[in-house]
Image 1 (spheres, rainbow, N blue to C red):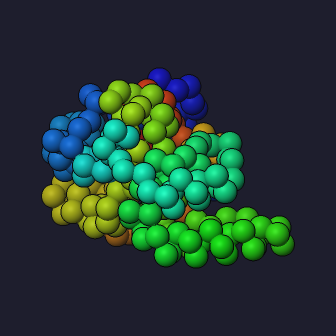
Image 2: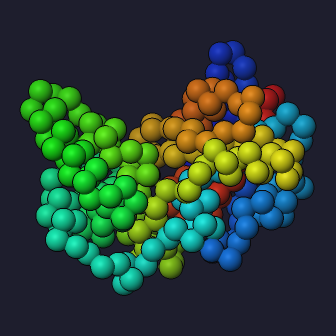
Length: 225
């Protein structure tokens, strides 16, 4: 389990983070049933629950074994131009680039690459992913996860994260946020049930208490102290 401070203070309010450990998830799992199994026994009124984006995607069947991917010429060409970043491989691999092309279309990826290359000359970074879109940005390359069998899979972002949170709220009454978080301070709420202050949750979860390794903590309860 990753070491972290259980309580953070945001705007003079204390929030406790309680990561919830589960078994290794699979496409056979249903995210709502997992909420009922693991989260509801610990849930208290007023809690907010965060879900890591990759485990949600796994339950949707969006972890693609590298052995099943057919890498096209465009992916083999473009991956080399993706900048190295400190928080992971991202699309800097032919396998994950192919998944981005499959998700968003080759023309959009070519456009994103072109705009990204031009704007980089003027010191503007990040335009590739802005043009390519959220699903391209959410792709995790193979080896990102250390947990078998997902260490040999490219994991795409979850489909319709906003709809997923709405379905969870309707089925369980629990307010949830699907998060994309890394270990160097990146924290984004990519889907949230109604009445959630996404910016506040991003601040609360900025140090990534759920971890990025083999913690197996896809859920985290946020509780006001």
